[in-house]
Each structure stands twice: as C-alpha cells, then as structure tokens.
View (tube, rainbow, N blue to C red):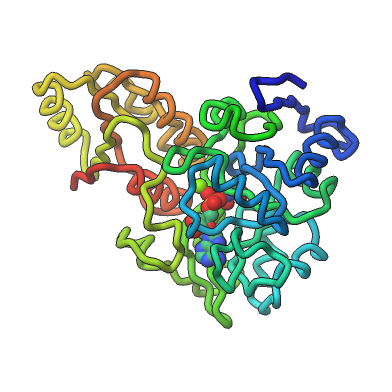
Length: 348
Ligand code: TXA
Ligand code: MG
C-alpha cells in the first residue's frame, strides 16, 4: 500500500485466487464499513464507493465529487440477498434482465427498500441497482457485506475515470483510498433502465445495448432525452453538463471535408486545434494534435478509450477539440450520448 497525501493506494492483481482475503481488499472493505469512501474498478469505469445505508458516507461521496445533491447514486451489490434488502419488489421483467445480464453493466431502477439512505436516492421512491462484473468490485462488495453506493469516481462534470490515476487526478486527498485494478474494460458506464410494469425504458445508454435487451424482452423503449438530448427531470443526472474536457468540444456530424473546413476556420482564429479521430484517420488531418481513440471498425475500442482520450486533451494545451462522430448503433449509441453531453457545439 502506498499513501498519496491522505489517500491510500492499493495495487491488486485481478487474477489472484481468493481475492476477498487479499490485504488490500480487506482494508478497503473495512474503511467502507467505517463509512469512509473508497474508489475501486468496475467493468465500466472506476466507482467511488460508500455505505448505502449511511447518510454520513453518502455525504462524503457528494462532497468529494462536488456532485449536486439531487442527482441520485447507483447501489452496487454482489448477491440476490442484497437485492432483496434494498428494493421493495422485483417485477417479472426485471428478473428476466437480471438473469441474463448480471453481473454486468445494466442498472435497474426499482422501488426503493426502507434501509437505503434517502440521500443516496436524492429523496426518490426508486433506487438504482446493479451487480458489477469485475473481480475486484465483487470481492470488495462481498468482504464489506453492505450494499455500496458508487457513482463514477470523477469530479462532477469531468470525464469518468478508467484508471486509478484518473481517480487520483480528480480526488486525491478527498477520499480515503483507491484500489488500482488496472484499466477498466468497457470504458463507458452501465445502461440505466427504468421498469414500469412490463415496460422497460433506457434512461442512459451504456455497456448493454438496446439490441441486447430486446433479444430478451422484445420491445425496449428509449427515453426521449437520450434520442434528442432534450433535458428532462426523468433521470436527474441528465440535466447537468457531463464528461467535459477543459477545451470546448465540437462534434461534427458529417464527412471529413466538413471537419477540414472547421479546422481551417479555427486555425485562422489562431486557435490550437485538437482532433479526436480513430486509427483509420489518424494521418488524414493537419491540426496541432491528433489523437486516435480506438478503431472505427470495432466501436467497443472507441468506448474503451473515449474518456482517457478526452482527459489526454486536457494535457495537450489545445484551444478547441474537434471530434468525428460515430454511428448510433450498438455501443455507438452510448459513445455518441457521452460526446453530445460533453460537447459545447454540435456541427451538423
Ligand atoms: O457504470 C456505472 O454505472 C458506474 C459504475 C461506477 O458502476 N456508475 C455510474 O454512476 O455511472 P453515476 O452516479 O455516475 O451515474 C448514475 C446515473 C445518473 O444518471 C443518475 O441520475 C441515474 O443513474 N439514477 C440513479 N438513481 C436513479 C433513480 N432512482 N431514477 C432515475 N435515475 C437514477
Ligand atoms: Mg458519472
């Protein structure tokens, strides 16, 4: 274990047997039981965990992130018993989704159980819950044996962290510790779905695609705020700026030709221009900094690297970032949702 100021850092090997006996996991779980906040990897992004039953722990999460208190948190669990503890009921369609996608990047909004801190759900009668598919997250949850509220472990408004270093860049000295389990796999957050009787509606696109959900339950709705980016109070997190790098981000819907025009326009103003592209086009642009974010032929690689690439631009001293856009299908829906929310301007 290392110590960076007030924040502890544990490196763990994801592949060791019996992770729940590992010293780092034991210590991290103890801190969580003492209502401290600790960051850890999940299969999507790093989360900042705190005891879901403790107002004190939840207050610490909101304070460390600088998160508005009306934006509720996702509760992470490792077992069916824990699910029954934190929700009032599980509709049939939710059971089907759980059977297929848990552990995994799918968050369900269900009627709230009594014990969960009102602060964690921002006073709502519903609670967001998921079982993460990451050995470190599951070991911490099992060892602590309490449901853990965990938003992404970034300062509010910034891109989510996909490495422990990103967590420290945002939260050093503000949290008790971070468990380093390497780079996260999926790279964008879980899909958040609302369950209303037998109706399922995607509030936030993410690691599980609409297509995957529809193979299990037939029709799945998509909330209008996802389709049109009109801000709505349905999922309170939707009304804030998110995932934003320091420089303004322009997302171009169109061909390379339009992108070149915008580069020329910005450079004529004396601006240093950064380009967010993929390996296929990395040599196609004349700009001050060109970063490849995965490969267009495999959109999951774009998702994996999206937040790290946005964070990289913060270190490149550019005045504006111009990004290509991606097809809104499969994981591309989540990628474009994050880019649109991070964008200052959409160029059609
Ligand atoms: O992949 C993930 O989901 C990551 C990892 C750490 O698990 N967590 C994450 O949490 O992305 P956060 O707090 O950054 O995003 C939670 C989202 C927000 O958009 C929030 O508004 C929504 O879930 N949410 C939480 N509770 C809700 C509720 N009761 N009703 C509607 N939306 C809710
Ligand atoms: Mg977040």
